[in-house]
Amino acid sequence: MYEINEIIKLELYGKFAHFRKFYTNASSQSYFLPPKTTIMGILGSILELPRDDYYDLFNKDHILFSIAINKESNIRKVNQSLNYISDHYFNLLVGKKGKVQRTQCKFELLTGNIIYDVYLGLKTKKTEFERLKEKISEQNLGFGISLGQKQFKGSIVKKETYAKNNFEALAEASSVDSSICRRDILELNLNEEINIIKEDIPFCFKKIETGREIQETSTVIAEKNGKRLNGTFKNMVNIKNDLYLSFF
Image (tube, rainbow, N blue to C red; front, top):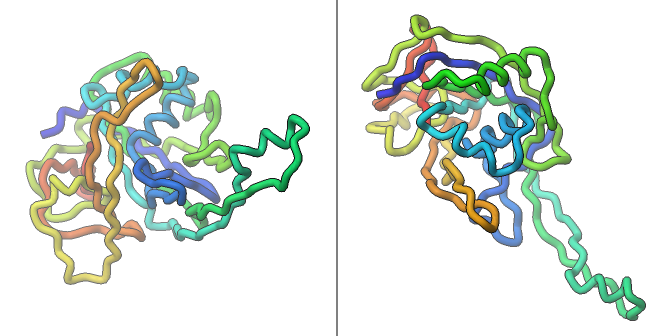
């Protein structure tokens, strides 16, 4: 069961996004919704923290995340062919002769009306979390918001704050309005007009000498258009007898 003391609802939106799958190779495939690690990076950017220095601050001992596709969104994937310059191109720059070699790669791009609802489940009181709330409310967004890559600018706003008396932890629930880890699904009702997406996403990174490495991954299930899923789900949070959220 969760031990959350406060929930902050944020809305993350933009026109274009690309959340690169960690296992993709030459063809850059994108997740349909931002992974937990992407949200952590966005919050770290708002706080102007150095890269790879925010993993401990946003670990599951201090904060949990619930990520949902907003019902007003209309997200679609398109494939773009990008021309990449060969890694031997530098030969031309030092006076060598020859034809510029290029290679084409497919790039999966999210476009349309991209809106995500992000819920922060605060487990501990930290000055950084208070500063984060203030900065988002004042739209003082530090290094800025990017939806996966720097060229895809995004926006983030604070929608609501829920005190502890406005939500309750449930051992089980019959509905879920957010993405959910597969391990928390006991039964899923597929006898409805729903469009299920399944993503294998990173949950957390660990800082190492050469940069970072993935410490944990999990399979996450969501409804493509933000519809409610019905079935039997464990480790849930109910907000005001209305929203049923899964945190991870």
